Image (tube, rainbow, N blue to C red; front, side, top):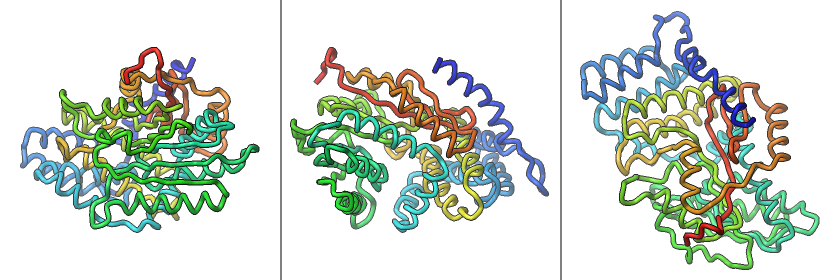
Amino acid sequence: MAEEGNKSSMKGRSKGHQKLWQRKQPRRELVDLGTLLVQCAQAVAEHDHLEASELLKKIRQHSSADGDCTQRLAFYLADGLEARLAGIGSQVYRNLMERRTSTTDWLDACSHFHSSCPFDRTAHYFASQAILGVSQGQPRVHIVDFGIGFGLQWPLMIQRFSQQEEGAPKLRITGIDVPQPGFHPCEMIEETGKRLADYANMFKVPFQYQGIAASRWDTIKIEDLNIDEDEVLIINCMFRMKNLGHETEAVNSRDRVLKTMRRMNPKILILGIVSGLSCSPFFIQRFKEVMFHYSSMFDMLDANFPPPDNKARKMIEKILFGQDALNIIACEGAERTERPESYRQWQARCLKAAFQPLLVDPATLKNIVQMKNKLSHEEFFVVEDRGWLLQGWKGRVLYAISKWEPNETHDDK
């Protein structure tokens, strides 16, 4: 039934995207920005500078960072095409990444995003239910978070631990993330630890934090994580596996990270992924996937961010969406750090690494659906498919989350 529900929700995908890209633009020449963008991408792929430049000029005339969702997306995709055409994609991307954004402003923008769109809220609830399920009654819990970022997932979890009848366990979080550019590469990881420690202290939850900066997660050594057999070990990785780098036939960093996670022998692995096909080595196929993925994201923001929140919306679109899209479009090799795969591809990877899937708890699914119906726009959907909780907008799957346990019959330590 889940499969049928998923297929049903996906039916209108192509028509929905076609309508999205062919919206009439008042007081301007009627153009199909989607077609122009694909034509431009083809010219860029063929190194036809004259044709690509003419198409870019036309796209610029009909796009704007302040227009409707189609015009805004075209504005950012054009940045990626322009950088690729000039052969400076990696340089442009590095410059964007090195620009400092106020932590307060960024957290405020993220708060607006999370309250308007249910993806993170749902994923965090799913994860907290899974963690509570395996740690009930246990005195010590150790969460290793690959890609902790600002740690926005953990205040709710700390609060839930504090409400347990038997009292809160001793909580240890190991936060892993890539070092930031600049003079203080570990600043974000350390600041996250301080904020979480303050939060745990507020709710009287015994707390310990260890931050690890690692550019390549496949080089992390298990002994550096200080795992204690007396602790319930939980591995969490929320929407960051897409950043695991350059894939080659000889070294597959994603499989290596999953094998490291398996050797850690956790009680549970919670894996959230951005579901997409932007890993393709073929540029045109990759560009079309980016265009359709982000057309859904920009359309979703249009429907869920009221006008007073334009500043927050613009920050999300520029930093979260625009930079990622530029990286996929304009960068190659090791410089391309955005490589989303579909949840079915991750299913195969996890099975290969000797994990076995755990089914979505029916009560958790019911609560998530009820929350979605009560708090979110009707075009958001959430369905279950073979142990994956799928979330999306207007029929397109955008995010997926699942939970896994070590497969003891296929012990590949």
